[in-house]
Image (cartoon, rainbow, N blue to C red; front, top):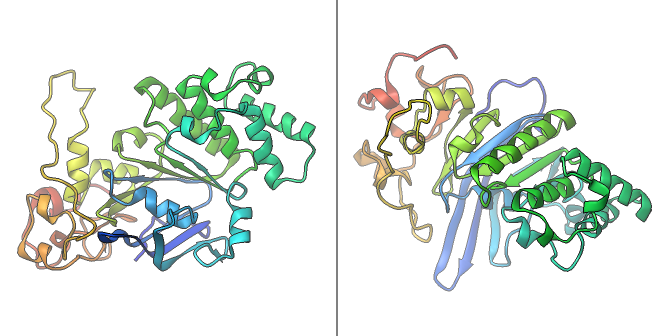
Length: 353
């Protein structure tokens, strides 16, 4: 089931029941289990979850960038009418870096330390566009200016180690934008940066998305990082979608215990008071042997017997009035016969949809 808010356009990317596993001597690691979501033109979708939740592997599966022991076992990922999971390798290579681009976590490991950043961007442009080296260099200068790197023509001659962490990430953003992608995937683009630079990079991404009209998937482990940047959020845990909805709805009225746990672990800086953070007890599931039921059940204070026995469906607004339009939660507490837990399934609708 794919749940989204109402849109007037068709999704640019539609992922349905995607399942991905990695095979090792220890057995099958079920990293992604039946994930479905849509991304619409001109929107920013945030995918949030702890390390090992499957958020990065989901996007790596879509882009066919899995390691040799990884395999997409089921599902589809349709981009502009083409199923990326079955697209011939040659067509997939032509599409990556052109129509779909990706920004990786650590720019220092993504950039070649032996080449100037200008050489690397020029090479990327010429790999997908039939242009001269001079035109590619001109485009590179335009891109550096676009991502607000000072003295762009001069900095093209610099090596990666001559940039700060924030500036290296701007180089990676410029490289990702070099061929005017329709979809940009940013995988933890601010993880290695301090808080001030994080905010600058995220605001830059939002400005560029608005200016260029591209769709963006922003992957992160921190709900607070993307609160002001994304339009919708997909919360993942144990390789599955736990909750999804508009940003305002998930922050004002989260309806899955895991989402609530993530929000409680974020300090409220506006209160001006000392606070005790509320970490989620326990550890993420072992994906070699994932739980038979809800993957969050062993850590959930509201878990019932059925939670450990069967995986709940994604309940949406049509199933219960406590979920807002476009919001969905994978929790047995939204079943019609579930006991009332006010903070999760209060029978009165809190606010307008």
